[in-house]
Amino acid sequence: MTTLPETGMSQAAISDALDAFAKDDIDWRDGRSPLYVFGTDPQAYEVGRDAFFRFYSENALGANRAFPSIKAMQDDVLKKCAALLNAPTPEGGVFTSGGTESIFLATRAARDEGRARKGIGKGGGNIVVPSTAHPAFRKAAESLDIEERRIAVDASGRADAARMQDAIDDDTVMLAGSAPCFPYGVIDPIAELGELAQRLDVWLHVDACVGGYLAPFVRDIGYPVPPFDMGVAGVASLSADLHKYGYCPKPASTLFFSTPERAERASFEFADWACGSFRTATLVGTRPAGAVAGAWAVLHYLGMQGYRAIASRVMAMRDQYITDIESIPGFRVFSNPELSIIAFTNQHADVFQIAALMQDRGWLPGLTQEPPALHIMLSLLHEESRNQYIKDLRQSTAKVEKNQAAGKNGARAQAQY
Ligand SMILES: *Cc1c(COP(=O)(O)O)cnc(C)c1O
Image (cartoon, rainbow, N blue to C red; front, side, top):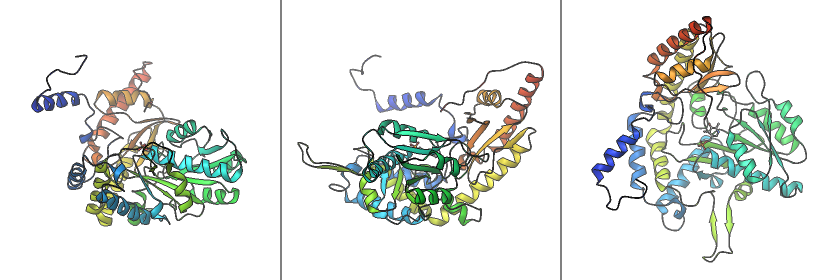
């Protein structure tokens, strides 16, 4: 069919077609995907879904003029999330579509502040980030016409403040650290970066996209979590995604700033338009009101206790995964991740071949290339699948070892996202 059907399809036919489209999708409900989707308890999922569809047609772009409901919910979410992350200015928070948008807006604000304060001309400016920083920083830098400097991390996979300091010059407009970084799940030394940022007068962004709504609760239940939030001196902005460990419907992320002036730099205003003046706090224009309602609903349904209870289950599960994985000869978890992301290397067997065999068994492989390792980001979706995962991992590893011993090489999965 190269054009739309002349007569529309029936809803029943559409429903069948949607099922057919989904048939080759990864079986994420059974824990087969190590990323992209996050599990919470079934009731919280329903609460978020219901709230999302109640505001399915409303547009959060019109929150200020047409939908006080959305404005109220958004303000409330930002206020409560700001408190959770020790952000001093909840009124300056931004509800965005995801980590990428949050990072983009922070980078643009840092660039504009840096250019204004340091007299850097158009096309000038650079940002200094650890090599483990999310590609969203590169995307932002390329789009904003500034240079991105990626600096090697230390042996534990964490940002190396001394090396980052060496890369900073008069044109540096932003430094960044992750809490945690996606590749290894380790938290960068944010306090040290904050000290550096203050000393050299550079904006520090903390990318807590994946950890922001998990780390506070992991700390509450007694696991050690180093300081990473906006309470750390020197932090200028922080991103934290609600659609990850906030368990809220996509698209939903938050961005906070240390001062109202900085928040102001992230917003956009254009007065010279046929319709009059146009102002947004986000990069996108039209955006789903359902995501705002969904976030408000899930956050309030779970409450602090709910998030703590889920964090306990996630961390107990993570500990069990680590024990089980390390019981397979050759495997070792890389470094000492604080939260729910683990990467594990194998001393003898090629992990890319293991990943290919895991893929044959219906698991979407997660991989890192430096060091070569398998990678998983755990949520409640992975509780029930653990035994099967470990069994398949054990068998796949044994098979690769046997092949390697016989001088045979199998297919290799790619570290590709
Ligand atoms: C997911 C993630 C991002 C990007 O977020 P999106 O919502 O996918 O745009 C940025 N940083 C880290 C550490 C992440 O895990």
